[in-house]
Length: 430
Image 1 (cartoon, rainbow, N blue to C red):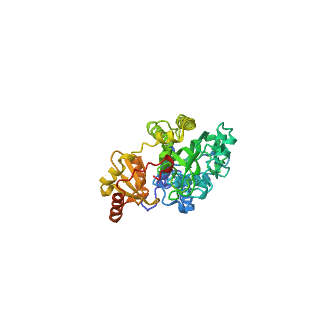
Image 2: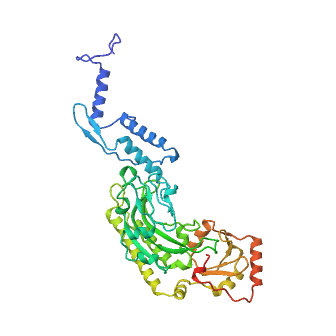
Image 3: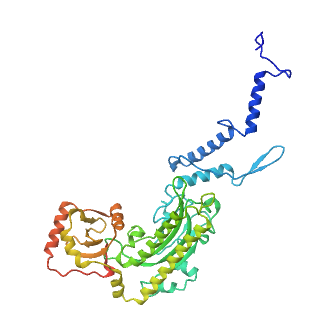
């Protein structure tokens, strides 16, 4: 300040304070530093907030949301930005996918890009003979019947599906490109919300609706998909999705636990383990954007090609076996121990199957016996601990109450001396 209180000025007429402010601005430009709350960052943050607000069912946003914007800067007297789609649309798509990641993978369902949901009617096969045929232009899942798909692909074994051999199985591999070739980018093409890396279809298996032993078995087709999705934090993961429309609406993988289909279940279980091991053992096989590298996608494809070959071997073996030999090879069922295990079972080992109204006895050594309420043995089989936990978690098997236990033990006692019932492979109700 001068003695008269006026600010000191340099010879150019600018005040010292103005000169210092100019110097600070020059230093900021030279260092590339932007002050907090700069207009560009504020505009981007506002665009992301608007995108989440437009998706009302999306729930709370994730704590971190990595975004990549692609645009071209065009020089001129007035610089301009060119981008297709627009930056606003790119942000909206990224936010939409982030919201979808939380529940995009639903076992037994595919993701519908048109509805942006795995809960819509399009995400399930419309009938038991249908398999996933790929996405349409607008991301709508297509569901041809298995014979339609195999006829279109000139499968050599498709005729067997129409013949008298109801136990015939035909399997086919379908590449990811064939499933998304018609899909538009605006409707999910290239999206990692639900990316099918490879697919296998097979059928038919004869399944009977639970609790309806009078109805005949229903021919059911299955779709197996190696799927890449994202966790809530955006990390990639690979899962095997088993998709089928079972007669009673049960999960497709549950239907395969029938003793008549244990060989098929084993093939599916091997594929699931290989895919999980592949993802866990190959964390480095990712692109810079975090997507599956071609090598990892190729390995997932190889897993499902091996699955198709294994199912083909089962089909050929089934053609050479008699029904009796098929049952003997499949069952591993410890029926001889059924009564002994049932009488010695502690209270916690007696369960009720809610859907079928049967009593389930958990014996030692992975032995499981299924009885009618009148104490008649329906079937016996071997189930590992994971299979038992899965049924209990889905509340299919629940603890048998005290009155039910007493009635069941009384029914067993009244049948003492009867010949044990030895069911055929087709009569299992487990």
